[in-house]
Length: 442
Ligand code: PEP
Ligand code: CO
Image (cartoon, rainbow, N blue to C red; front, side, top):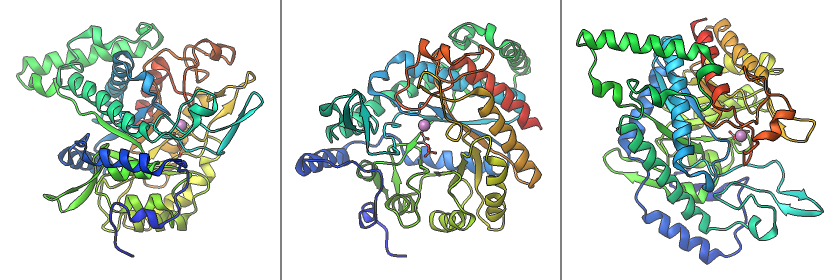
């Protein structure tokens, strides 16, 4: 294997990269980014790696979730608080029902780049470059806005840092304190998920009891961990946020705590895998139906040569109709190695459909079915599912059908706001968390 450095990926074919038309502008932006302070620090990254290692052995459960594509315009207190709130509510359901502490990782503060199946799309009678996420171009459908604009990399950095700053202030400032019931309400009231109210009451009772015994310190309850993640797609941006950490003698991507490689860019001889193999962060690998056992094992050797627990999370995303045939051969191949991977399930990306009115959607029951099968298949093979990866938002959007609100295809038109894939709304997310908690108990 040839030597690695933060730009060695440039010697390999890089899929899904935009064409920037002004090289000096592009280089100038990257030079500024390289001088910016990091968004996260290595100690936090190492802490996450340790927590994920505990999830590998079944002592914790990973909840990773957030937008498919974050938008600059949604960098608002309401949107950030909504996502944090729903993730915290879900983790109460998971910890209480599943009897395990939860590691929370948002698709947030940097989830701005999207892989696309086609480089162009037809809108009306015009063929435009595809939208690739706010890091690269603008969703608005005209030629100027679809140009790849390098200044967006700097904007993405500042939007990430504003988002992260608010998340840090909220988590440090007691936003997650269970003693404040008003912070734990769902946007539409808790009527939609009755199990949630019961759980909250039980959790508070247990806390009061422990506090009465002098067993829990308030600061422990008030302080929570919340980590950030995004897809490592636009490699010049990722490279600019890659920093040498001398205390550790290694390179870290300090633009997020963990980053993942998508289904479309995990070629063994590709630039994305070359980039990821050299950084010390925990890494996610999306695994869909196109992955063969040999490919997966080769990827693990490349990304995790020292077989380190917490280093690799395999995020499977097959679809409810395919997981039963697709997962077992991959699972067995990984079990035959000594790589201590964390298995997570993304029940979103294999279950996309198109509604009669032409909107991308996913049905709650298909998402649930893939999750249920994932738990069963792991158990049947002496393995365990240690996490979930979900596209969600705290807001009352109507993008996925089904759930207790029984959203129909006609309802999708009411509040369809995603810039890319359909997300579970706040109520659907919490309801899903209760169902997952049941599955965790088996
Ligand atoms: C995503 O997570 O938004 C995504 C594009 O996933 P995948 O690479 O699994 O298709
Ligand atoms: Co998506």
